[in-house]
Amino acid sequence: MPSKIWTGTLSFVMVSIPVDIVSATRPGKVSYHLMHKEDNSPIQTRMFCPQDKKFVHPEHIVNGYEVDQNKYVIVKEEEYKALEPEKSQTIEINSFIDLKNINPIFFDKNYYILPRKGGAKAYQLLVQVLKDTQKAGISKFVLRSREYLVVVRPHTNILGLMVLHFPEEIRDPREILPQNIKAQPQKIKLISETIKKLKTEYEPDKYEDKYYHKILSYLEKKAKEQGTITIEEPLEEEMPETADTGELVSALEESLAKAKSK
Image 1 (cartoon, rainbow, N blue to C red):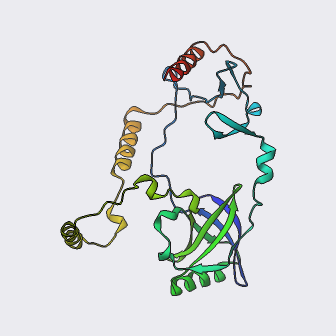
Image 2: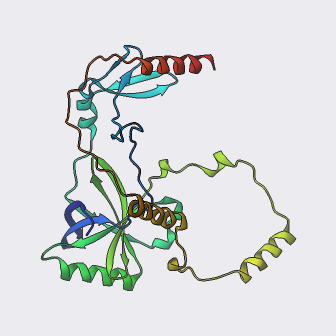
Image 3: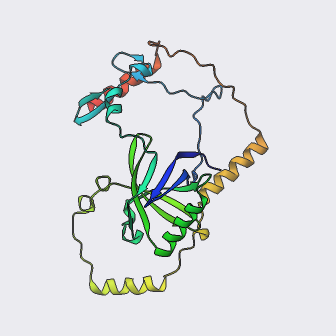
């Protein structure tokens, strides 16, 4: 069972359903950990200030927004927290749409909406009504300090929640390909006929990420044949305000010098 990312109420008309939201997908990639070649210890990431030549503790780090090249506005934590939208306890559906009318470029992440205790009957009713009417509910709600535009739609016998991109997140294709390229009519006809011959139904089970399965099999085989190593969790230590950075400082200074010379 995937972990819950949100718990609250799904509301439409006069009906309120207690629900949980979980991810509809799992990572289709292999995650690696960075480790020290000499002793196989996990590598830690620390923030370093090249100007002061010292490590910086998280409590001394602020956020900067670049308004122009090399010009920043510093934003303190309490400032952006004051601007955060109020957390949602309810996903309220006020309107319903035809999903086919949404350009797929607006589609982002997918989640499942699951009924909690006492909500199963109303939940199944909404699933069935959306399937029968071929409609999807549209709403906005706040998750982890960010407001999302979402679509609630039926997926077999479960409700799916699809996050949509806001219009300002979509690049205008005219900025990328401004030229209006016209194709020759005879070539259009030829390619159209070819497409008709190659037409088929989309069957997701026919496709697989071969590289993902190949590398998983390799890693499982290597672990079985060569064994694994056990890494002890390192003791947490206070991050130093300053440090003898040695080669790190030299490398950073060299990197900065190269950047300035470009």
